[in-house]
Structure formats: C-alpha cells, structure tokens
Length: 581
Image: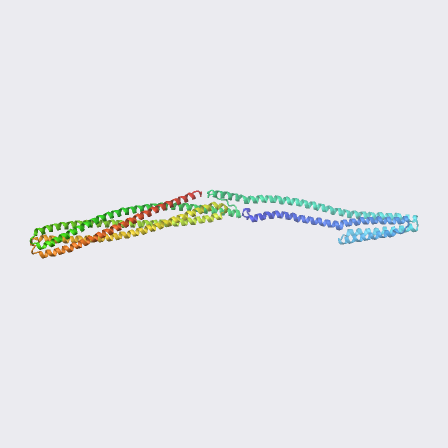
C-alpha cells in the first residue's frame, strides 16, 4: 500500500504504534527478565540462602557437638552430654527442615545427601557418646582407644558437611550470578529497545513530517500565487490522503475560479458592448427627437401660414357679403343702373377669384400639414421602436447583472471553501457582486426612463393623430369652400350672361342673390371653423414639440446612464484583469 494513499491519522497512528510496539516489546522482555530476577531472588531467599545458612548452622552444630563430647571426655563431667544432646536435636531439626525443602522441590540428590548426613551424624554422635562414657567410667587409656574412631567419624562428617555446605553456597552464588546476568540482560534489552525505538521514532517523524509538510508547503505557495492573482498554478496530487484531497480540492477550486473569472470577463465585455449599443440608441433617439422638433416647428409655421390664409378668406367673405348687400340694395334699380350691376358683378367676380385662390392655398397648406403630421407619426413610431430596442438592451443588461451576481456568489462560496487563502477572492467577489447590483440598478433606472419615453412617445402619437384628424377636417372645410366658390362663380357667370335681360331675369337675380347670401354665410362659417382648427393644430403642434423635448431629455439621461454603465463595465474588466487564468 502506498504511504501517500494512507490517511494522516492512520499514518501517525502507525508511526506511534511502531514506536509504542518497540517500547512494549522492551517492557515485556524487561518484565520477563525481572520475573526471572524475582524468581532467582526468591530462590536465593527461600532456598539457596536458607540452605546455605542451615548448612553453616549444621556445621557449627557438628563442631559444637564435637566440642561438648570432647569436654565431657576431658573433664569427666557428664553434664556436657545434655548440651551435646541439645545440639544433636537442633542438628536433627535442621536436617528435617532441609529434607522437607528437598522433598517439596522433589530434589532426590538433596534428599540423598540429607540421608548420608543423617547416617554420618548418627554414627558420629553415637561414637562420641560412647567415647565420653568410656572416658568417664574406664579412664583415659580406655577412652583414648575410642578417640581415634571418633575423630575419624568427625572428619568424615565434617567432609560430608563441608561438601554439602559448599554445594549450598555454590547454589546461592549461582542464583546470585543468575540475578546479575538477568539484570545485565534486562539493562541491555532496555538500551537496545530504547535506541531502536528512538531511531525508529526519529525516522518516522522525519518521514511522516516530510510527507505532510511537503505538500502543505506547495499548497501554501499556490495559495500565495492565488492571492497575487495567478490562477494558473496547479498542485501535483500524489496520494489520496487528507493532503492529497486538499490539493485536489484546491486545484478544482482554482479551475472553477478561473472559469468564473473568464466568464466574468466575457460578461463584462458584453456589458460594455451593450452599454455602447445603448448609448448609440440613445443618440439615435435624441436625433429623432431633434428631427421631430424640427418637423413640429415646420408644421407650426405651416399652421401659422394656414391661419393667415384663413383670415384672408374671412376678409374676402366679409367683403363678398358687403358686395351681396350692395347687389341686393341695387336690385330694385337694376333696370336703371345696369352699369352699376355690371361693376358689382365684376367686383364680385374678382372677389370670388381671390376666395378661390385663398381656398386653393389653404388646401395646399393643409396637405403640407398632413404630410408633416404623417412624418411626425413615423418619427414617433421610430422612437417607439428605439425605446423597445433599449428595453431589450436593458433586459440583456439585467440578465448579465443577474448572471454576474450569481457568478460572484459562486466565487464567494469557492473562496470560503478555500479558507484563509480565499479571503482575497472573497473581497473581489463582493466587489464584483456590488458592481453587478449597481449594473442592475442602472438597468432598472434606464428601464424606468425608457417607460417614460415610451409613454411620452405614445402621447405624442396620440397628439399627432389628433392633428391629422383636425387637418382632415380642415381639408374637408377647404373643399366645401372651394365648392361654394365654384357655385358662386357659376352664379356670377349666369348673372353676367343675362345682364341684358335684367328685367326678365330679376327673379333669377333675386334667387341668385339669396344663394350668394347663403354661400357667403357658409363660407364665413367654414372660415371660422378653419380658424379654430388652425388654433387647435398650433396647440397640438406645441404639445408635440414639448413631447419631443422631453424625449430628447430622456435620451440624454439614457446616454448618461449608458456612460455610467460603461464605467462600471470598465471597472469590472479592470478588476478581473488582475487575475491570470
């Protein structure tokens, strides 16, 4: 299994486990050795040392018994026998104790030695008692004969006792040596295991530290590069441990952040392009508003000219009415003043010609006003379409702002997941989010202004439609005037043709005068309506001009907002240009 694929916790656990295992082995071996030392010590305490001490005590008892028996033989005092018997009893007790120990340990050799000592001591003590008794009862010469055998028994017992004593002392020395050996071995095991654990611990600490700190140093270096705006750095992922997963996560975060920065760059470019397009549309709308203002001024001029002509028609109508009155007053003397009638007819014909000329001019002015109003209507329709196009651009800007806001939110999340290294990017993401909100707010302001422009445009279209209707009414009125003038012309011609038959056509003249009076009244009435219509046209044209000025002002505000939007886009591009992706 590759070490870099092992988790840091498992890696540290394995390292500490190995070191602890070494110490555990050392502790177990030490415990085993100490148990041996304890066992050796117990044997020394309970067996070897007591055996050696008993052997020494038994040797003293033998010597004491030999001295007691010798004193009895020398002093002939049998009181020493009791002391000798007490020593013998003590010797027998020690033998019994040793026998029990050897039997407990199932030591057949030790039991055999005890048996030999018991027999030798019995022979020695019996011979000693006999010798002391002979010395006391039979004298020195008889006792001296037994002295030699007693000395031989004592030498034999002493030799056996000495051999036994040496064996017990040797056993005690052996146990002591075993204790020293076990202690030295334990000390060596502790030294070796401690050194091994120390070396293994140092090696594992260096190895594991390097396996952890190496990738972490690389991750810190990458984080520093990211903080400086370089998002092209990548970490080499060599394992599946926590550091490897952290490196993979940093690589993924860097790639995602780079993608978002690229998309923000593209979106900011689209935002700048849209702002330029919006500025162009605003300029076009401003130009159209100026054109509409110029056309409104032209229509106003034409309306003034039309008002002047209508006033002329009114004057001609009044003059014609006066002439009709003159004709009516002179009709009674028609037969006597034919020259006066002819003059009046000539003057009326001239007036009717002026009326016809003025009516024709009024008709031409009304046609010009109709053409201008149609052009104004087309201009306002163009403004409406331009406003709709601006509305679509603001919708695009809103979507771009919303997408930028979403990207800024994703950048904030990725930065947060990056921890301490992602704080710089969180600040940038918040600035981008703020700019996106400003862009959305600017787009909302522009949309509101566009709605105002669209409302003004609709009102202007309504006004122009009203002007067109009024001009149509003017055309109808002028047409009625022309018809009346034509009818009056025919009447005058009839009067001129029948002037020679004045008497005969008096009734016809009276009827013609009545018709002329009616036509004059109609013409005066139509002239009044035309004057009123002209005033309405002038007022409506003034409304059109005001709407055009408001449209021009709205276009200027849109142009200003487009400039601010372009500034925001430039700042956004400048911010994201700090990143290298």
